[in-house]
Image (tube, rainbow, N blue to C red; front, side, top):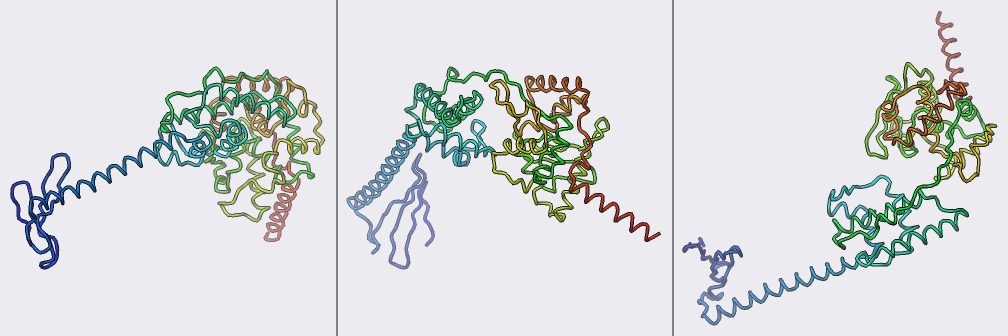
Length: 425
């Protein structure tokens, strides 16, 4: 039945045949259009008393729903306000906080989230993980940092590095910063700047001499996958995570470029693995090409770094043992002195920068390959480069034939090609 309009209201029949009722739809300011029952299913108009009862029932239902909604929201707010540090930390590291709130305070899905989870589980949750975020005080944080340092020192058998303390301090500060917004669980950050750990005492850091790298690459006692890994790290300056993410699609043999899509800063990098001023730099491409052929020319999505033969996070230990196997015995690389840092895998990257500075390359050329390096780091590399110059060591030696297995394969291919050309002539 067609609606009948009277002013700002609409009368309508709802139902089938005579089994329906008349309703009035009325525009109510601030509440939209409401529907009120006017008749019974038999078609008899409602009396004022019946109409009042219908309206009362409807309003009661609406009020009950509003009350239930409000109680639910209050309960959710109460539960949220009592979120523990571990519960909120899990929301952050799982990405749920980002999915709910977006890029508030530079929230994002971090590529280093595994490191964040490890630090929180090992050094934060055991001490304040069960406390409500809203209740944590500066003293709680202070004691947590102290206990974490004692536990780590006991496990390591030596004092915890200030740099490691700083990493835990930073992740705690970030967690409580997010608890203010978007978490809205508290109004202040209990991880104050007064709790920031100091710096480690100055240490002497190591890097490889050119002859030491050549000896390492030539040592057959070291798995060939690790030796290719060392060559990549030293001749590109990429971080360990970036190296692990390289696939054969990253290598453009035709143009001699390498593309790294994963970096600590999130910025992709593409650079030429050649430079007229450094002839030996492009020899890495020879190593990679032969490595590719030795593996049977894997698909483009396959990783370059493989067959390392060592546990994750044990690359530094493996590197030092491999150097000893290659008869590299320079004491500084293995020193246990308090003011000397034993050689780390990260120092392959330091070797690249030191060699590049020795070759006269500027900071822009270096940062195109390594990402940002602060002034203190560059000053250290400059000092190391001067040491290389004093020793008259030329950086980036030609490593095209440094890996015996790859050099032999290359020689065999060259010999076979020569025979083919000779027979054809």
